[in-house]
Image (cartoon, rainbow, N blue to C red; front, side):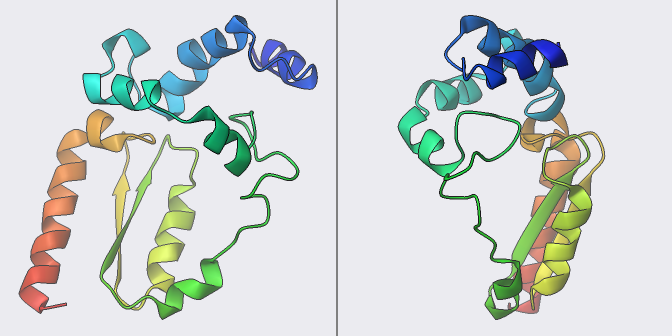
Length: 150
């Protein structure tokens, strides 16, 4: 599977139906939403259906496995600016997300009023695949911010 994806990317054959099939059957159910695509909730399907490929292409490039040279996000790094944000912020890290949960916790540490939530069963859409922990953590964050007046 990995070799096939690498070969399709090397050929820049991102529009190949097989490329999307490989993403939808292997990569996405592991890192985007940990359930078969056929079981994805309607809002997720609607979101993917309304995705602006032109904007996605400009921001990241065509690959799901890294930012392409020349993409807008290639050199975009705001980590050092986090200390300037004063609003209460919840950084959510999920074990199976492509975003490193340890890095998300480090982001929370940089924020003057940062909070961290780790979801051991979650992926990029942890509000669906680690739902109980996600919403408990979100509600706790809101309640904490509300009672502290921050």
